[in-house]
Image (tube, rainbow, N blue to C red; front, top):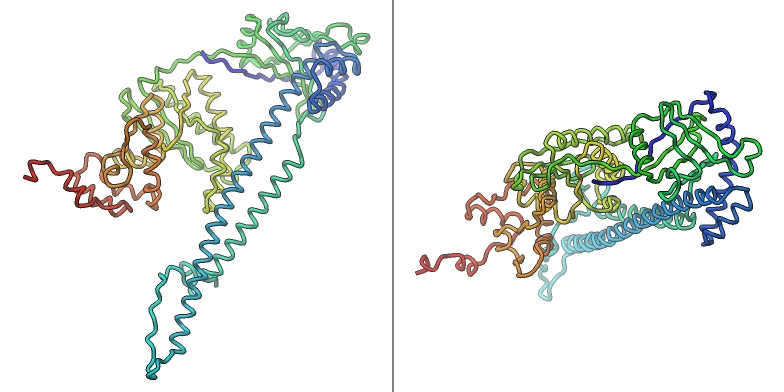
Length: 535
């Protein structure tokens, strides 16, 4: 049974019975809590010990030890989150810088080829215009242009009337890549120079962090369930002369969604954390966080899974049976271009609902890729449209919504390695079942979720290429060697021309030669013939 920390937010209505005194106390405590948070942040950044920092906050602001400890723990979590975000941001920028540097190296090589071809063409034209003579006064033959005419120094690229030759276009592309590299380098230096920025809120948040070792899960803010639940708040020392030792805050508008989870956590004496803050409308809200147990109702993974292959623009899925064979597949289109934050979240939620509803009906677990999805945003390509989709796709938000809904519905989520999933799906399953490449990758992920990792390389490719199965070697090693042959095929749709495992061997040998694979040698072909046939 998975356990996840859940937060439930409840708005506090102003000017209702029993709320006035508590809200006045929170309004007076809020600016002091903001100053306490700033002092705690400075002390944690200076590596000050928490005991000394706690005593300093108590003596400075006149609060008890638990109030100070709550602020320190809350700010410590915010600081750690900001550090992780900065580290991830720098890692993404480093990967983008490395990618652009590789593009610049390729552009320099391409530009060199352009210049060499332009010089060769100029020399060839000069030989035609001003032919040289031999000693016998005969004209020398004009030598043939040895370089392949893959670069033209006169015609515009693709016949487009942009007035640029291939050489000029290569110079412009190299210039743009250098500008992009400088932009990423400046952005990285600014992130490092800016340092770690922690958002503590404009008006200050009042945290009451709980613990399982305290009474009613929290010593300074305790929940009292009932028809109208209430919070018993410990007043800080500097306000005791006005409001007394404790204040009671009734929650007339308690959030009914999750209230049973809060009561269960209170009954089990699990830690309850309360954070009071002002929303955008100026109303006080309280966010209550507790550890929630969720039950799983989906079948065991051995009875089949649903694999998801996440790509910008589409989400391919494939459902398998207990043997690992596909029974249904498809994809969900996502158009997130020029969408606001709310629109993006709404469209992602719609896609998540469509996927989880299918998993709920079939009671199959969902298999996803186990990786840091910021890694996909580092893989920039030359295509502007693809890079725009890649940058705009909210990977973290999608998986946050997916996992939250799966927990709510009792659907089990399994994370597996995504290595060579797209490649295996295209080579082995795309044409065999007539599915798209993203659905084929989802089939591979679903099989891995079931524990089927033995995706062996087809014999026709292992025979005709340098990929040879070796003993005591992981199957990924074969696919790694096969990867260079896989990249020679320009489009994934070209793999539809290759035969499936049910096709004839003769057709397979004939068709694979058109995809960049070396033909089988005569000695290799003879080794396949049965000895009786040779005789």
